[in-house]
Length: 288
Image (cartoon, rainbow, N blue to C red):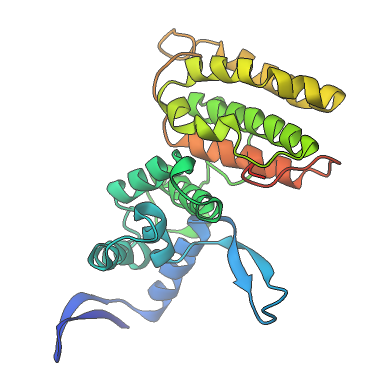
């Protein structure tokens, strides 16, 4: 098989921007590898067959290259930037090349700043960012290009046994987020939670921001009463783990910027709350 990409630089002229030859079996294997390693559960597709009653489509898989680029650089990104970034993702799919570090970093930075976008864009960005970040983290631990031998250390499902500092702080923020979101919904208020408002600051200074959030949730904790017991218990368990020492001999509960697992820990915990069969269930992103 020959895979070729062309672009129209000027009217009437085409330039070849990508060319790669491989046999058909390898081609199918590479596609399967991409779609099997860059996965998360997404909710940003809609069936609009009936305009008055659009149905949300939930699917688990890899986001489209264009969706990845728009999530990384924004829906209003320059067309040339979008086109160039998509070109850089093609080798990731067809040649098992690592996802460019700057794209992964852009996804992480934007996902940590939810107040800069609309709710629908933030929800879409979060699952796309988690899919790409999860793949990027796992690719560092896998030297093969075989899906059968691929080991997923970082998963979409919540891993309560994970002791990574960034992951634990992500789970803790999700608890602050869901507790306030449930209290706001109970009183009929519609606004973003303090956890989302401070997400960017939390990423930079997690310990001091967590202490600040602990003070801010006090009225919401009282408002929920017995309904907050399980959440508070979960927060105490995570906090106790964070007070343990890491390999450097320091307590993990400190103001050191968080890494990529922060995002997957937060989203996995939020989706766990979203799917947990409880009477009080908040939206996946904690917004009202």
